[in-house]
Image (cartoon, rainbow, N blue to C red; front, side, top):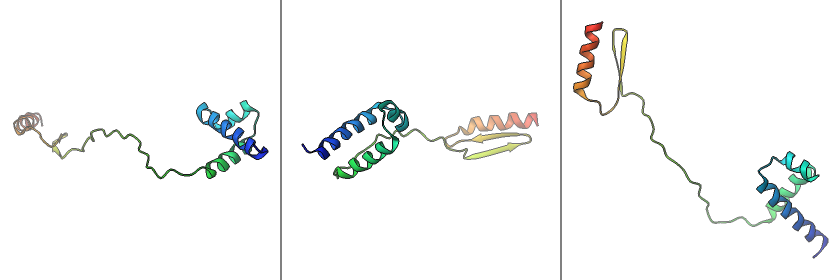
Length: 103
């Protein structure tokens, strides 16, 4: 193994260690006695020398139900009532009558 290949191998291992450490670049470099400049240089050098995978990668997505805005806002005097899709007409009738009696 040539000196250049040895150095590339060492930095590949260092980068693997950095990425698995969960530390910021500066904290990891300080702990290893290296400069931030060296790490950034070797990250660029090694990343550009490795072939890019043509296989798409997927990340999981969680879809949560969207709360829809009120379909209708009904105002009777100082009171307001938000009516959503799928409301009960009978319940709405009772609420409106109760509000009318108060206003």
